[in-house]
Image 1 (spheres, rainbow, N blue to C red):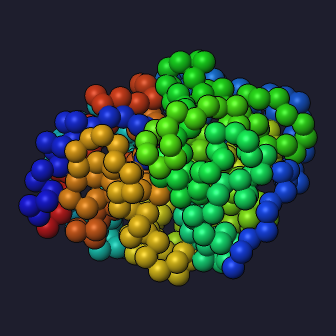
Image 2: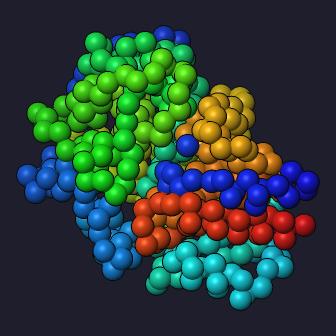
Length: 395
């Protein structure tokens, strides 16, 4: 447990982000998975500006019902993984309630040794309700890369991005590997400022393209390179969107179709998974799937236990360890998973979504929230420190 005693001190430096066989060359376009009306396409193209600047009341209402706001597709649950009730964590109700109030938490769950040791809900959320993920979706998308490698549909993560997204040839992505976008070290310039309506993260899906054309590559190919590939880490949601494009082209399936086969059913999700789409009808790899709180926890168990044979042996050992330094002692970035002091790792999303995996304790913590702003150390640090309190209490 000594490794975890340094966690709170390291958290004081944390930033709020995220809230971290040969394949054939893919076609530049994919068949649209659904026909969207002009109004739906406009909502998709302006989704970043809409969501990031919703009021508190809009967020509380819409985060639980994104399928009512935006088009998307659904992965169907199969046989659920049973989660037995375990002994309550020795953390007082007052401490838990104070954390939930301060963080505007909609759901909090702790699983240890496969048993539920804490489960609380707020903001009117219930156990059967879904809540949006924001960038926690990135960890799902990277897992599908591992599945595609296991299936021989992606030859290697060392393949160039342009093998799968050839329309990026001649752009800043020439010479960039799939692994380098998995670790966000492409060297391409990007602005992830959620408060700036002119930032790349707000504008990335707003490019007008023809039917079935990929809005992600249309935007990303306009970006300049600022560093050599592999030399600089910069958080870029647009690159996870490209990962989603790669998976969909390599497999010939939507992310929901592939996730149903490779994550949702093998992990034993109890509820269906909804995933938003872009104007080409592709699921948005970097954001915006919606599942139940317990299924976020089941995803953490699935990853901690190695992926139930759906990814190559050792995939999560690599995905959940530091592949790129992010400039904060004790913190790093893996394959779309954040790494923390003491061997912990997890997914993060803006507005307070998170999965934390603590292998040392055989523990998973899942939380969904409605923070008053997208991100910030003043919110993420207390969240991580409370996670540490929960882990230290779990003997």
